[in-house]
Length: 540
Image (spheres, rainbow, N blue to C red):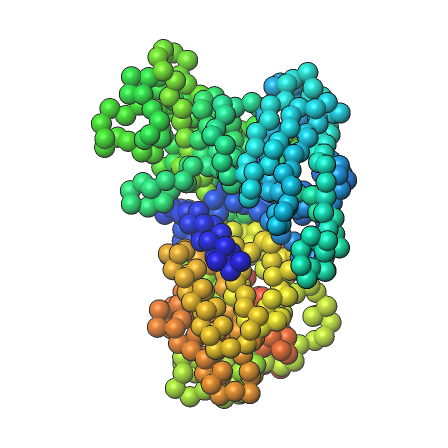
């Protein structure tokens, strides 16, 4: 499971793309925070494509009956859901009447001696096909003719012949649930050319292609022209749209028609604005292959929930083979001060009045003083690893990627909290050994390196260590030495935090070495300092 999670996080990290912009009206860095649009947690496809991501609790309300729905506390969230009965149903929505296709990723319940599983799929009480499930995960495609679709709500029913209790079919299992098959996602959209049967991620089904270009892994949105990709998302406070437009090197005819590109934005009032429009002819030379890079500032729509649509078509004035355009790594950036934020939850491992001599912690915090206990009323807000969720959510909505790395049982519990689903990376180890700490430190360092020069929010929480052990204290504090060796103190706000007592100990920020946590200081003073340094919008 850890290796699978590590791969998923690395894929996500690989998809976080950045571009430095030369024009900026304010004296601040632009290339600081970013998100590949396909992976925006709040992104939803537009009306031309209807998607149900069964790993997303926000989509559970489309599941009407016959599903095991986790609550995130007793039953943790997962990347798929099980059906719980012989008949299960889902609500699908259509914005227009047309021939459509249904893309479903399913895995049968596998155990020794398991019989073959057939899923009968109905739309509005009419059978549209039967799926003979293969072993392991597979993506299946069914066609839905226009005559079987109605505008608005359509009910998809999934029927299978048997369900099983793990306690009946697996030795030593105490699981009394009735399990049918597990589902990852459902896509209901206009009919498109079929692809070979295989396992596709949701991003790939929605048009993402991954390949090596210029020595790097690149990510492209592509579908044969005419195509349209739409996402509904909330823009940060100083948004910039960065993207590339061009023809796939593997998919163009040099004698074909030019490709047309357009990007539209629909604001909260429903008014449509054209952000970008151009025509690109097929390249004649190798040096012309690839994508042209563009950017558009979106300050007029800051803080709004908007729909951004990427459209491609062929040039109507030309004949010949249609060349389909593609979009290279569409990215939402936010113009911020050029800083990371690093929360070190290691305050319980040393006497805060006398930081360990000769350590990076002493160098970092030599002029700070002990913080006073926090007002208990202030701590009645929702927290994650002892940090206010409201503030972490603000940082996330402003675009910073956030990673949590922890050891100990409390760290394991954190991964089941709802806020954990919005993290870009989360690695936890339940054991309290030095080996677990070294693993979590390596995972953290790998994540930071994968981000290259991009800014981030880091929560480092080695609570599995023994606070009474000199060796464990030195182990925890050694992470500070690594940060200073790599000069993170030069461009990061570093908050040393006592997770046992739920209070900040010191805050260090570039150009202003420490914020002293005196008797009249509290979490709000920490947040005020972060808002100042990070140039966050005032949302109070």
